[in-house]
Length: 226
Image 1 (cartoon, rainbow, N blue to C red):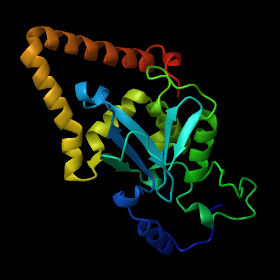
Image 2 (image 1 turned 180 degrees about the vertical axis):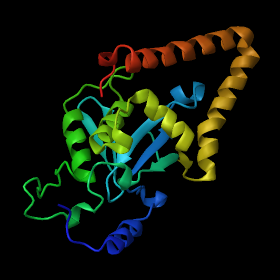
Image 3 (image 1 turned 90 degrees about the horizontal axis):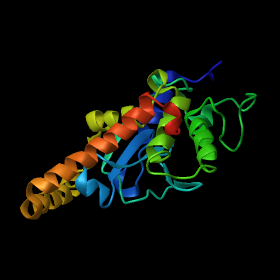
């Protein structure tokens, strides 16, 4: 059973936790930022994290390491706010869950709440090795979204990347330059000095990388961890 709380009051509480880019607070959001070097060649590739109800960012940044409130590779450039009514977790903030609930814990690891689901994913990935091709930041966020039951689950690294591409909102106008300007410079220099050879190798690199993640996500699902 859900706690006996006025729904209108609860919505006001949730809406009061506003997005604050200056403090890097993005409540119940997925956040994205470009990666050094990699994004210079493919600007759609980046580093992502998922945020707690208080806006603190969690991101899988290295072997057995989940960053808390220290987003790797710089400030978020894009974000997507996730609606709780599209998830299977409680739509009430964690602090309003019943204290006598058998799943409740003072550490905030109740898996029926937003923060509890993220806590479970964090615990799991704190014992995983990081690999850009098989277990990366997208794996961590996809795992969290599946625990949350967002849009019925079934998320993987490819569907998540496409979702960010199509639905992601820019934090500020400067974020667009931050993402695409290095790519335009590198691509322009590559065409100037490399010509068709650069274009060929760039296309092959993209095809191999995209092919790997498509095959690992949809054909041999154990290749990429979630």
